View (cartoon, chains in turn blue, purple):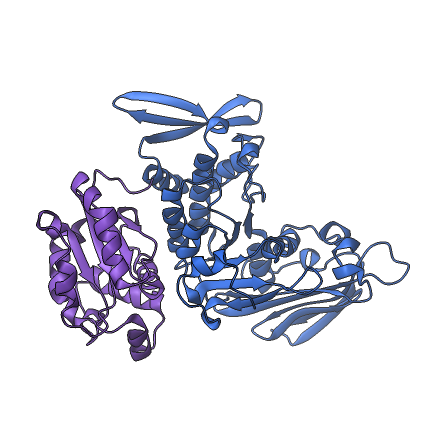
Length: 350
Length: 162
């Protein structure tokens, strides 16, 4: 998946598509500075209660044409109430930046071929606490990338457009879209142009939006529409669910352009959209990530599925809840005829 | 917004899944006005594509004069297939109906040039945007030239607005 700008995950309910988002959220949280193991993973997360097998999370990312590999293994020894770090390592292009066994961390410095060792509480992930030397330090690059991971499974009813501050880090449910809007436009004012361009494409009568100050440090988004010299102001929270998703999409597109290389996981982006819009929505996302960043989406919607091809569609399947999920590229599976028909008939199995 | 029926737009009716994937690649090209294109579900065979066109689209083509439609079919090395399909296109909308396809089938083209379908589609769009017809002149695609020339005149202006 590393070299795909966009990819789709499909599979029956319960095959683990959204669980991938949950696993990615652990990495995102680490990037955002949460390092207490108990806040990242709970004992219930062990597969079938097998506490004697460590939970191992690994991610490989291509950033600036260098392969970053981060490994975090967690365990729950007997008589422990909280998981602890069993192993942790960050490698860049095969070279270790640091490695760790339980509390013992070894930091490598390539320039002087030096090693330094120190101890970190084994209930804390080391990555957020290791001081980065500069903005070009691989530690900074990787942590920044993790922090900027966008994971979305929006719930429009929670998206009110109200904000108490600014952020560059959206919540999974999209509830802080007001803060994200403010944060993005505050940090990158030129992003307004991109947001505006997209919104005019999807809503031709869109005029502009205001982030009106309602109280001390409290703002509320108001969207203005106009046609034939008449205007209409609509509170963001009163927009339709689909229209709220247009706004979310506009911010995702702008964020990918202005943050730099962003990874986005959007769980069922076709939700709440009209059937005539789904294809355009997915295509806009795919096109936006074509030259920079990466987007991974899940879907059960035929229109969304059709906007991907066999080389960027992954099938997830498992025989039962007791067996692990299998995942294969659609181009590696013999599917004859229409993919949608095969999915409807439940014919695709791994 | 979905396609604006009152502005020039193009419906694309692919015969099969391989052609659908080629179109997916085509619309990835940033020069293509994706908002002027609506891709229809696959017809599952070139004859069914013709049936779908005659049953579902002739009436609405007359209703919406800005509507154009492109049928993407496999020619299966049949030289008279285009003529056969053209017989089903009413004269009054002939200038808005186009038929393109691989001379044999997309799988042969894929094998021949060692690219996946999306990459083929992207290359075809790049050729259109850059006014060079490198891939369009491939032996399995060159027969499309007359249809392509018609499309350059009527469809390209809104499909590649810049």
